[in-house]
Structure formats: structure tokens, C-alpha cells
Image (cartoon, rainbow, N blue to C red; front, side, top):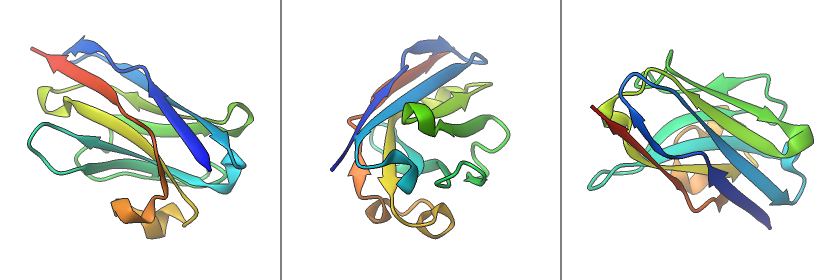
Length: 126
């Protein structure tokens, strides 16, 4: 009962920045922790970041820590992923997802996230 729509993906040169957005509708957005995942061609889905219901706590793996930042604006029912210093290996379809779990518990386990967006393509070129 939560609909998620990602936007902001585009072609960007290595070293550049992008901000992805995920707009949510349906059930109360602030009741859900949110996560970002990505999937590159031929690769498994990879956890990127997660944020708590209130936005006070964020989590991310070492692969993106220091470059990517997740945030949310509950008043706008939107979660963001700020991506800086983009690398070629960041090329992927990026998905946002919602979970009723604590993001500390949900982490990057896809099945812990009940609702998913359709994804937005990010392509990083040299």
C-alpha cells in the first residue's frame, strides 16, 4: 500500500554528482524506514543506504560511505540519495524501498523491504 517512484537518474561523468529522489504515497511515509539499492547488469542487487523513520540514523556499506548520503523529508514524503564523486562502477539501476523494520535490522536484506520503486538508471561515463 506504499507506492514509490524514483527520479533523478541520468548520464553523468565520473567525478560528478547526482541526487536521486524517491517520492512515496499511500501509507504514512514516516512510519517506514527507507533504503536505497542498486543493481548493475549481470550483478546482484546491492545495498546502498538506509535511513530510520525519523531520519536521525543512517546506514551505508563501506563501498559508498563517504560518497553517498541518504536523507529524507517526511513533510514531502520523499527520500533522497546524494551521490558525489561518482565512479564508473556506480552505474546501475537505483531502487528505493520501504520497510517497517528498523534499518539497522533490515540493512541490505532485500526481503526485509516490503515496497519497492521501479528504479531509475544512473550511468557514469569516463
